Length: 415
Image (cartoon, rainbow, N blue to C red; front, side, top):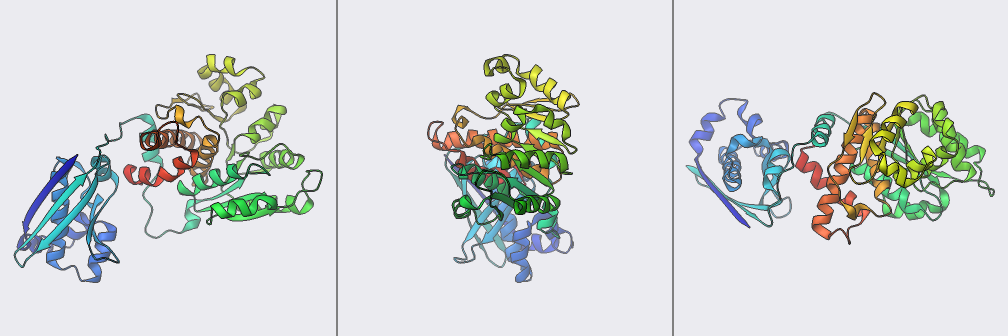
């Protein structure tokens, strides 16, 4: 598919508009404005930027009123100096998967732009409860902010043979915006996870030969929990004595939201009353088999009564429950129930749940309410799955592909 838009504007018209000190702030994006500021906002260059925005609107067939004009930015490549379009938010949604290039020129009297879109068109995101929740809970970042403003997530994940679960959950948490991700894992698997991820802070554990936690590890856990704004525990954790004691201690002592996944759920299922010791908000993300262990029933029974069991569990245990599967359900203790509409069978692979757990915990670490964090993560996780299926096929897509495609989706959503 080929889509073309052109525009021509008199530079005198733009010069007069720039007499209003608010004009540039209304039409120029942040990066675009920063580049032009270095050169003193030359009228011809501002006119070229305005032309490019008009040309883009014609290429997508909408006019300027259909998107925030600042979501289309004309930038110069740092190395090449060539003009390029940076699309975000509403403009990126209108782009529908097309790749846009731009050519601009100007004389003393006129500026002109030609914008060309190529590729396979993709429909805009459909309005849904999940999309509305995600957009409402993720606010644009303040210009004056730092990593501490976006939460510190403690991930207690991974064990020998399950290093990938720690890497995938932490990687997903980072991609979903947490300011700091601290990964607490056995020293024996640190080289594997660190080779995959450069961004986390790592706290290394040294369990005793019998699998129990050392005194030093207990102190490290207490200190890490005191720093955290949310905790994820369970992805690839195993069921060692150290894992069990860590779960029990976190539930009893955490003052920040706790997300339980995988072995965190399996350990809790062995002594379900341990959930009653939690004094902080709790989120569980079981698949049907893990849910069956929590309820002491079968996966088939869970599948036959998904909405009822999800609601009852959330109410009884005062927890948010994300029951995974086709049409993932998110139940809240206050009776709310979200039914997800994104996702596909290509996500039925080991590791997809670790990605979802990391996403959910990342949102919780940023101060988003547990129910909203779970709903937003489930929707976005499924959307990532749908994009990966379209790009790689349901058979060939991988859980790590879900993490890799998140930046594209955040741009499209405008966050």
